[in-house]
Image (cartoon, rainbow, N blue to C red; front, side):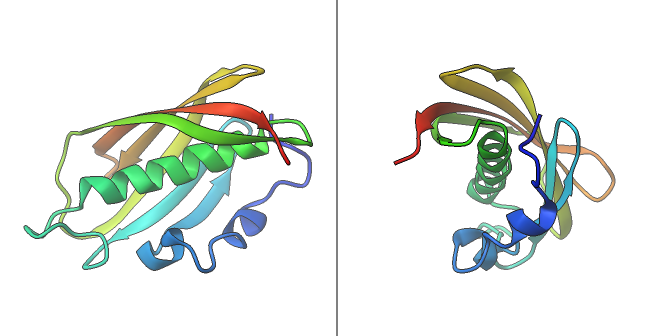
Length: 138
Protein backbone atom coordinates (compact mmCIF):
# COMPACT_ATOMS: atom_id res chain seq x y z
CA UNK A 1 0.00 0.00 0.00
CA UNK A 2 2.84 2.38 0.81
CA UNK A 3 5.56 3.34 -1.65
CA UNK A 4 8.65 1.10 -1.61
CA UNK A 5 11.37 2.48 0.63
CA UNK A 6 8.91 4.09 3.05
CA UNK A 7 10.09 3.85 6.64
CA UNK A 8 9.61 5.23 10.13
CA UNK A 9 13.11 6.73 9.90
CA UNK A 10 12.17 8.62 6.74
CA UNK A 11 9.02 9.97 8.39
CA UNK A 12 10.88 10.99 11.55
CA UNK A 13 13.43 12.77 9.36
CA UNK A 14 10.69 15.20 8.30
CA UNK A 15 9.88 16.36 11.86
CA UNK A 16 12.75 18.81 12.41
CA UNK A 17 11.71 22.47 12.66
CA UNK A 18 7.98 21.73 12.58
CA UNK A 19 5.05 21.82 14.99
CA UNK A 20 5.50 18.06 15.34
CA UNK A 21 8.98 18.57 16.79
CA UNK A 22 7.73 21.18 19.26
CA UNK A 23 4.95 18.86 20.48
CA UNK A 24 7.21 15.80 20.71
CA UNK A 25 5.42 13.74 18.04
CA UNK A 26 7.32 10.67 16.85
CA UNK A 27 6.44 8.09 14.23
CA UNK A 28 6.78 4.62 15.74
CA UNK A 29 5.44 2.08 13.27
CA UNK A 30 4.64 1.68 9.59
CA UNK A 31 2.46 -1.38 9.03
CA UNK A 32 1.04 -2.81 5.84
CA UNK A 33 -2.04 -0.57 6.08
CA UNK A 34 -1.39 1.88 8.92
CA UNK A 35 0.92 4.54 10.30
CA UNK A 36 1.36 4.86 14.07
CA UNK A 37 2.91 7.58 16.18
CA UNK A 38 3.03 8.98 19.69
CA UNK A 39 2.76 12.32 21.43
CA UNK A 40 3.54 13.13 25.07
CA UNK A 41 0.86 14.61 27.28
CA UNK A 42 2.72 17.33 29.17
CA UNK A 43 2.96 21.12 29.37
CA UNK A 44 3.50 21.33 25.58
CA UNK A 45 0.20 19.63 24.84
CA UNK A 46 -1.97 20.67 27.81
CA UNK A 47 -4.85 23.13 27.79
CA UNK A 48 -5.19 25.50 30.77
CA UNK A 49 -7.00 22.90 32.93
CA UNK A 50 -4.19 20.36 32.73
CA UNK A 51 -5.79 18.07 30.15
CA UNK A 52 -4.60 17.09 26.68
CA UNK A 53 -5.58 19.95 24.37
CA UNK A 54 -8.03 18.89 21.66
CA UNK A 55 -6.07 20.88 19.11
CA UNK A 56 -2.94 18.88 19.92
CA UNK A 57 -4.91 15.67 19.33
CA UNK A 58 -6.06 17.03 15.97
CA UNK A 59 -2.50 17.97 15.06
CA UNK A 60 -1.39 14.41 15.83
CA UNK A 61 -4.30 13.02 13.80
CA UNK A 62 -3.57 15.20 10.78
CA UNK A 63 0.15 14.43 10.99
CA UNK A 64 -0.45 10.68 10.93
CA UNK A 65 -3.20 10.71 8.31
CA UNK A 66 -1.46 13.12 5.94
CA UNK A 67 1.83 11.29 6.24
CA UNK A 68 0.15 7.95 5.52
CA UNK A 69 -1.72 9.49 2.61
CA UNK A 70 1.45 10.94 1.15
CA UNK A 71 3.11 7.53 1.26
CA UNK A 72 0.20 5.84 -0.49
CA UNK A 73 0.01 7.94 -3.67
CA UNK A 74 2.10 7.29 -6.79
CA UNK A 75 5.32 9.17 -7.51
CA UNK A 76 4.55 12.67 -8.75
CA UNK A 77 1.42 12.95 -6.60
CA UNK A 78 0.91 14.43 -3.14
CA UNK A 79 -1.92 15.04 -0.70
CA UNK A 80 -3.36 18.06 1.08
CA UNK A 81 -5.89 18.08 3.88
CA UNK A 82 -9.31 19.45 2.99
CA UNK A 83 -11.35 18.44 6.07
CA UNK A 84 -10.75 16.99 9.50
CA UNK A 85 -13.08 16.28 12.39
CA UNK A 86 -12.44 14.89 15.82
CA UNK A 87 -14.48 13.60 18.73
CA UNK A 88 -12.69 13.89 22.05
CA UNK A 89 -14.03 11.10 24.25
CA UNK A 90 -11.61 10.85 27.20
CA UNK A 91 -9.44 13.34 29.03
CA UNK A 92 -5.75 12.62 29.59
CA UNK A 93 -3.53 14.47 32.07
CA UNK A 94 -0.16 12.80 31.57
CA UNK A 95 1.67 10.03 29.80
CA UNK A 96 1.82 9.25 26.13
CA UNK A 97 -0.96 9.00 23.58
CA UNK A 98 -0.65 6.77 20.52
CA UNK A 99 -2.41 7.45 17.24
CA UNK A 100 -3.03 4.98 14.44
CA UNK A 101 -4.09 6.10 10.96
CA UNK A 102 -5.87 3.59 8.69
CA UNK A 103 -7.47 4.22 5.30
CA UNK A 104 -11.23 4.18 4.81
CA UNK A 105 -11.04 5.24 1.14
CA UNK A 106 -8.07 5.52 -1.22
CA UNK A 107 -9.27 7.07 -4.45
CA UNK A 108 -7.56 8.79 -7.32
CA UNK A 109 -8.71 12.27 -6.27
CA UNK A 110 -9.52 11.89 -2.56
CA UNK A 111 -8.58 9.79 0.42
CA UNK A 112 -10.34 9.35 3.76
CA UNK A 113 -8.40 8.25 6.85
CA UNK A 114 -9.56 7.25 10.32
CA UNK A 115 -7.19 8.09 13.15
CA UNK A 116 -7.69 6.51 16.60
CA UNK A 117 -5.80 8.11 19.47
CA UNK A 118 -5.50 6.00 22.63
CA UNK A 119 -3.98 6.53 26.08
CA UNK A 120 -1.31 4.40 27.80
CA UNK A 121 -3.99 1.84 28.77
CA UNK A 122 -5.31 1.50 25.21
CA UNK A 123 -8.48 3.49 25.94
CA UNK A 124 -9.92 5.65 23.19
CA UNK A 125 -9.12 9.34 23.72
CA UNK A 126 -10.01 10.80 20.32
CA UNK A 127 -11.41 9.49 17.06
CA UNK A 128 -10.77 11.58 13.97
CA UNK A 129 -11.56 11.42 10.26
CA UNK A 130 -9.34 13.19 7.74
CA UNK A 131 -10.18 13.84 4.10
CA UNK A 132 -7.27 14.48 1.75
CA UNK A 133 -7.21 15.74 -1.82
CA UNK A 134 -4.76 13.94 -4.11
CA UNK A 135 -2.86 16.50 -6.16
CA UNK A 136 -0.07 16.63 -8.72
CA UNK A 137 3.18 17.72 -7.10
CA UNK A 138 4.65 20.88 -8.57
